[in-house]
Amino acid sequence: NAGVTQTPKFQVLKTGQSMTLQCAQDMNHNSMYWYRQDPGMGLRLIYYSASEGTTDKGEVPNGYNVSRLNKREFSLRLESAAPSQTSVYFCASSVLGQPNQPQHFGDGTRLSIL
Amino acid sequence: TQLLEQSPQFLSIQEGENLTVYCNSSSVFSSLQWYRQEPGEGPVLLVTVVTGGEVKKLKRLTFQFGDARKDSSLHITAAQPGDTGLYLCAGEDNTNAGKSTFGDGTTLTVKP
Image 1 (cartoon, each protein chain N blue to C red):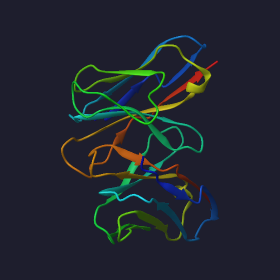
Image 2 (image 1 turned 90 degrees about the horizontal axis):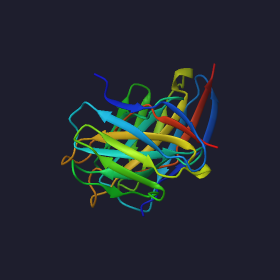
Image 3 (image 1 turned 180 degrees about the horizontal axis):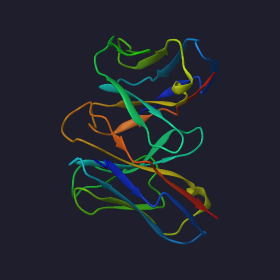
């Protein structure tokens, strides 16, 4: 059981380049999330999708777009990468409709913008 | 915006010592979760606390949810090098089920 799978694991981009980070879960979860993690700042929510067909902004959405392709997949796109977007990006999923459900995380994508 | 403050930010102790880390907020949460994250990996759930005053134990780890459901603590007894990692608390609010606010984490190093 793979859980939450993120690709790629590492990526280096030049300023202005675009890129899509992929995330897929095999736990039949309704809700999916994208976070960024910077040193000393914990996890900050970028976008989330409570269920298939819906997406909402989180705490730090500027510079990003998302697509909930189907129930399994939730992608994060950087249209024009900036050095401030250098970070570790985590995708997570959880069950919708039941409170107090934990989030299951992937192992992250380490992104460097030069 | 709901905020969760964790303290201390960094903690370095010797094997066998006890420690407590804290997670505090001015907001009420319907539940609070503790995660542990190792380098190069995503956070992994340790426990969820739901009821005010609730205490849960996981081997040498004891978790407590404050009576008012605004704060929580994690106590580790006789710490071991394998406990080393980043400990994150996350609170889920009643108004947006499924969406959690994360604290900035406590980085724990246990030296042999």
